[in-house]
Image (cartoon, rainbow over the protein chains, first blue to last red):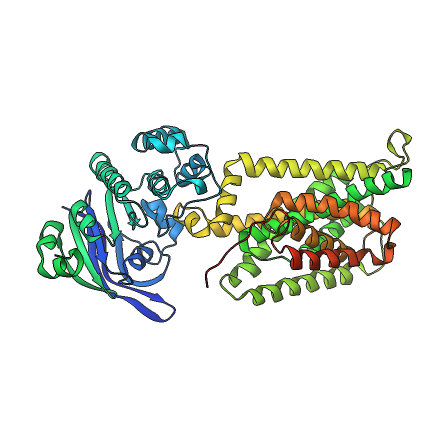
Length: 237
Length: 290
């Protein structure tokens, strides 16, 4: 298995404070990788560092190309889509306009229509709400929209920041089910940040556990699930 | 009655000019949450530019279009060179730079063109339309030009891909960068459009209030009041505020307080809006958790 994203010695800073310390991790092509950890462990910051939204040092390679120090707008063009913390919805725009904005980096605008329809296939509720203002959607619908918006750029790697946050369990299950489908049907690699460790380990192939900005543990998700410390601290049994 | 109608119509004409400048302020405010205090002086400078071109023998409309183009480019360059490096700086730093720009433009205009008041030509005939006694042809023309401009801008932001992208960059810069929008370019473009609007406002108001380096200070004050009245982040509010302030200013000036105190009306409205309803009539209240 070749890795699509590879980070080594990754550090990130807020002001002059180092908040990520020498992280090393990789995301295999076509796999789902989870970044786990408690509040403040540095999961969101890791995603932001990959996308150039925070100051960072170290090496990050995407499909072999070093992307450290590049502008966010250029990293997106290489094929990384990021659904940020809080979903990043364009609230005053319609559902369909949000999807059009998602395709901003695409050159082949002619295929945009068919892509939108393909995503409506995954999320029929969005098709019903296509002319509605995105700000009026429910939390779950907004998460589906955020996911779809990111997919509109046809990324090779999808960075997802807490897709389960603030959603009802049944909605979370639905979204995770579709993420699995997208991963399988489109061979889309996913780097997933989650506080819900149980859920994330169920979905992912491989997982990394962060504690206060350091890598504490990593391994195949199946093995981590059995791991003594993980079970006690994060799964609660 | 004739008098009232006359005041009403000429109020609409100046109101359209306030509306254009107010819209320019709102455009920049939405993109950066800053009010460009130099917007009026930039418009004044554009008007001088048009004046120089016309004086050099260029016909009115080519000079008009050329001025719009040059103003657009110059403002985009100013944004990239002077304002952009201030991204992330405290608001006060930006305010000081805006005031600095205001002074620079004012002084350069005075230095190059002098402080004597000049006449500025109107592209419209001097005899009133259908020999009416309510409104001059220039005022009709100014209203027409303003409305056409607003319609073009509306269509641009509503129906073009670039317009959509610019609105997105203004609403949510981080999310925009994450879908690959070059936000910095969009902001520079916004500055260009705002300056183009200002240039038209300047060229339309100059035949009425004449050309001098301080011509826009009053206009900017009214535009600012209009933008606040409509809600500083609402383009429609700014346009409506502009037109209504133009009318109110003219009626009050003619019948109640006289022309000397006209400027005070703008100040009174600014204070009133800030005290009674800071978000303006159509504005959005933003709640921030602290």
